[in-house]
Image (cartoon, rainbow, N blue to C red; front, side):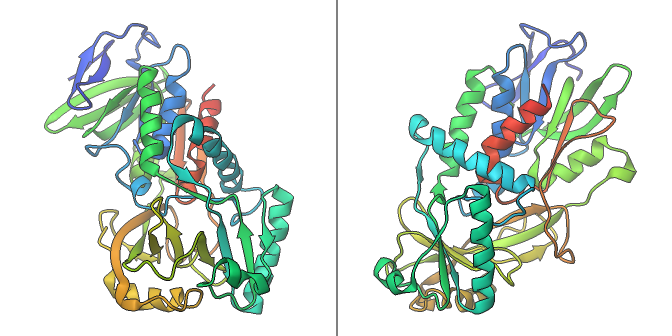
Length: 397
């Protein structure tokens, strides 16, 4: 049904209903902003937009809860910003986002731990890679330092590094759930509306009226609403949403890189910080050791290209390969204590044949005023989330 001049509302985050809006944002719009996708990125953007005076924001999510895809299936690491080209969006937003998270975490009760990270080099090539990383960090103002190998065993007795160790003290871990609950609370506090179990079936732009009409499906029900602007933060579904709006010569294809994580069932060997292999020669950052907020160890992720974002079974047949990588820097790990735990999917817009760096895509699409497109928002998306919300807010002002 057409819900013109009415506001989309959810009943305890359930079925959408309608009510008359207190301040129509546009003569023919139902809402000023539509944000598609209630992961950590969409929540960050929506909470910023809702806080602005005179806005009305609808946040739609196809699942029955917020943040169930990439936002809930990752290492939950607060990255320092070391791995990307200095001029890239990933570097800019990772550093800014890291500082924003640390700035609000204590104040707002968001669970985190600034545990630090070691990146370990086993040969000369990897040592040279870390030297360049350290030089770049100095230029960017990211704190790093080399740990003398003679002292490393006193600090982390279980860790083996044959050539060098680069310490990243500003790396941490965070509860992504705690962060998302904070953002949702902020969004709702400012009057934002969240619609769960709601699929975007189509979006069309009316250039004469400068409005977007979106068709939503909730079970068997269909609803059409009009918006001044659309923010595509749909993660795995972002290419599909983008292709609804843009002409065919600007369509993009999504790819899915699955990473499996392995739990470790013993308390020893133990580390006090994250341990990463040097990424030289790896498709990603390598199979690294991460900690949860309770101090439990897990390893991952590896890389396997899959055909669907729903392929979320952890790959037990990759345990042997993971064990081989892990024991290069943590030689006393017991293979029998490793078990497939969970898997996450990196939302990519380039496939396995592409070997170079790919930056975040965050752009105001030419010819489509008010349409902000976010594509390929993979790691360090969680770290960058607050900075991405800030950036999109500024792009729409």
